[in-house]
Amino acid sequence: MSTKGMLIDFTRCIGCKACVAACKERNNLPPEEDADLTSRTLTVVNRRNGLYVSRLCMNCREPACASACPVGALQKRANGPVVYDKARCIGCRYCLLACPFRVPAYEWDKPLPKVMKCDFCAERQAAGKLPACVEVCPVSARIFGDREELLAEAKARIRKNPERYVRTVYGEKEVGGTSMLLLSSVPFDHVGYATAIGSEPLPSYTWKALSKIPKVVLAGGVFLYGLVWIVNRRNRLAGGGPESKEMEGKSR
Image (spheres, rainbow, N blue to C red):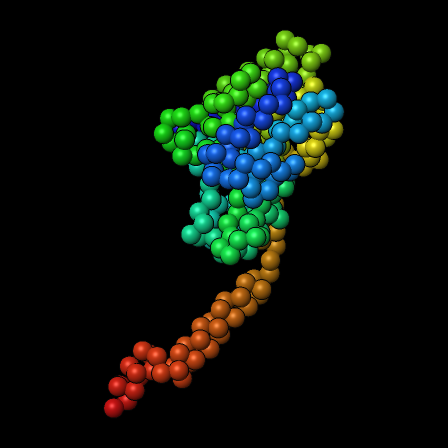
């Protein structure tokens, strides 16, 4: 299966925000617009240094959010999207801390909150449709396709119009590469994008850190888990639960 991507050319965006409205409609979110990414606004377009600049989940090729999630509530699909399973989520919000692009948002105002972010219209892709934001763009500032083909297209635009573009395709290598590929006429750090995040996938740092944890710490974790299990079982027996009745029957 080919990995899909989206090429967003800031120099072509006219700031109509049709993409923002389409994203809200697709995700059943309120129409009111936020200036930055929130649990109610998963795609934003803001004016920065003379350009209309988009922000949304980059759907990393090796996502730090998925690596940080202890229960697998965030998963990377082979075709590109990073999807979220509310049923698995325990609300730890490690994904918010792990994301180098500060994308995931939490529904702090809801009694049963979820983590919210763009999932690259995963279900639309599965149905053979374009992402909603791409479908409505009137000037093709966003195009969808195979990631490698989009990367070639982005580099071709830079070669043909070197005076128009910064000579970098943002997302090609950042933190191991992302599904979103960006073109700009202004340096990316001048339009709100982090440029000192490196090219190594962040999950690799997670495993490096884990490999340095002393075995005694891991053994201690196993011991504590066993201790908690014993205490809980003792409480159940003392409370007259099914286990206590079974034990009482055996003693007779």
